[in-house]
Image (cartoon, rainbow, N blue to C red):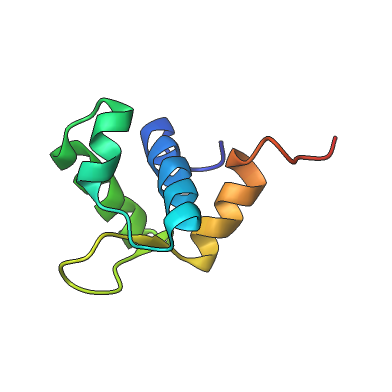
Length: 85
């Protein structure tokens, strides 16, 4: 995967899928059970993704949502179901 740590890519993948299915910002607690990681670990990775422009926080106390850059990375590198060979 292009310039992203595997853990960050996994978190971005789950976050985009959750956000698309629910339409609401995704928090670390929602992802922690599914990924088997602590909320703090996920928050740190989400913060890094935020700093790199893949995620944003619509409000101070909310979860994160993907940016255009986050969606583009998801489509180009993480989405495999619809990829044309």
